[in-house]
Length: 209
Ligand code: Z5A
Image (cartoon, rainbow, N blue to C red; front, side, top):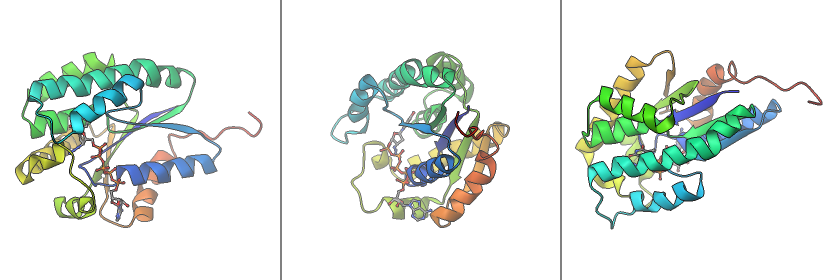
């Protein structure tokens, strides 16, 4: 069963689309397990507030290493065992976020270096499909308006523009894996576009199995 990841700038609607995809999988009798990054294990959930707390100063390299530590733990402790059991695993962010935010946003290392680094962190684990929810920066900012900013969201407009440009490059250079979806429309419309592709990856269970 597949490893599916969702990517996009904050407020692109990943969480919403993951909930809708899970529902559609359930309607086919297929259970799925969802993890958000950073998070998903005891250790990774403890790292999460260190990364998101706006009151903390975190050096760019320390930031890269903390996201990667959380990911390495999640891959080994949860994702690999679940995939070995045949589960569908859905991730709210994976290593593309590191390329987009730490590579693009923070400008740490080039794409090739980061890709090799990410391979070491994940032990070569790759998603079968990545849905990149493409929304305008204005739409994303409007959707985030009603909640408090985390540390990365306070990066400013230029930071988000670099993150967006990095996502566009990731999509361009990985078109076998990454499907770009227009995320600006209503949730069900976006979910239909995701499902059109995702249903080809989800194998329905035989009754009684
Ligand atoms: N980060 C990193 O730098 N490097 C890494 O390697 C990793 C992460 C893994 C994690 O934040 C931060 O870590 C993130 C990147 C960085 N920060 N930044 N900046 P997080 O986990 O707290 O949050 P997030 O991943 O950025 O997601 P989010 O902001 O919670 O947004 P979302 O999941 O994409 O969207 P949503 O929650 O589904 O929707 C947001 C709102 O919009 C909500 O009110 C919805 O009801 C509404 N919505 C959603 N879809 C629609 C549509 N289609 N129409 C209208 N309204 C909608």
